[in-house]
Image (cartoon, rainbow, N blue to C red):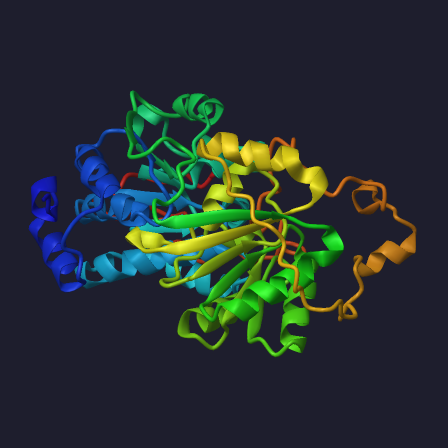
Amino acid sequence: MSNFQSLGIAPNILDILEKSGFTTPTPIQERSIPSSIEGKDLVGIAQTGTGKTLAFAIPMIQAALRGDKGLIVVPTRELALQVQETFGKVGVPLGIKSVVLIGGEAIGRQLQQLRRNPHVVIGTPGRIIDHLEQKTVSLSGVKILTLDEADRMFDMGFAPQLKRILSVLPPPDARQTLLFSATMPEDIVRIARAHMKLPVRVEIAPQGTAAEKVTQEVFFVQRQDKSRLLEKILAEGKGSTLIFARMKYSAKRIAAGLRVLGHSAAEIHSNRSLMQRKEALEGFKNGRYRILVATDIAARGIDVKGIALVVNYDLPASAEDYVHRIGRTGRMGGVGHAVSFATPNEKGGVRSIERLIRSTLPLSKLPEDLPPARAETMPEREPFQRFGNRSPRFSSSAPRSNYGRTSARPYSSTSSSPYPRPSFGRRPPSRGGFGNSSPRPGFSGHSRRSR
């Protein structure tokens, strides 16, 4: 059996790993860390919950110890905070400083941390661009770039933002680039390779492979019966449950209905503030809430041990998101179960998922003893529906399933927040590092023109 000592990791990092309880590397860690430490570009593909964050965190921390600056770009705020948590376990004892640049957080705190000359910047595309436009961060000295959930980073929704960020980074032959995800369609890989130099491909399982110990089933159910089926399923099990809805208003309505039924339930979606999202996730982790209802902003940003059940109340917008959703259970080799609700007109969506995972989803029969229908606790449609259906997206004749979309809307500080971008005020004093300034000794110079 392999161990971390055989992967070329520096001794002081090995000591921290041992003290933190990391003894045996996962397959993605075992195969990607040596190449990354050698400075090679890399595309890493492995199932969710297999330790990909540590697979790129260790090489980046080792690079930071020799003075190389790093940038990690992720699609959601939750994932950015999760990545920083992993960095903190290994990097903080070694004096490695990181900063998280995400929307919904006080900009003053981010500016203060940038002035401390962090070794690694972790952020969502929208907020990183906010800082670039305000000239409060410079990325010209980045030596190692990581795109976590890289398929989402290169999709049509995030592509313009990512292009803007890449334009201010050193060229591919002057930096190291690491891409990681559980799903990596070949068209995305072709786009990504244009920004890399001779990348090594590390594929632990074919892209789209679900976690080995997660059992799956699908119910074909009329839309009006979904809530009754959910009530039946929740009554039969007592474990922690993560429920995915496609729309933020649906997530709000489902959570409210569950609370009326006496369940402890919280919600995460883009209409919630960062503090509300943190509180909901922390409450779900510590057991204050048995149920968490979320949109796809949580499909790639939640690492909670012991989630017993994932329910796809609505099928996701893309088959790839299905893999990420159900990967929230059965993490790190654990067991889990995933249930999906599909309306009769969503058979095409189910087939798309089956093609991706190369398996047939077991079809379950609806229980005959569903609970009686209850009055809705909230109106079915968005409140502004009453103002004349100004957008065809909310038209009653619009199809419910949006399979066939080439991409999902990105969840970043610029696109998901209902509020305008914050004004950062005057430029802070220059201090070096990731802030725009005269460089510190041993660190390559910065340009004040970050565009």
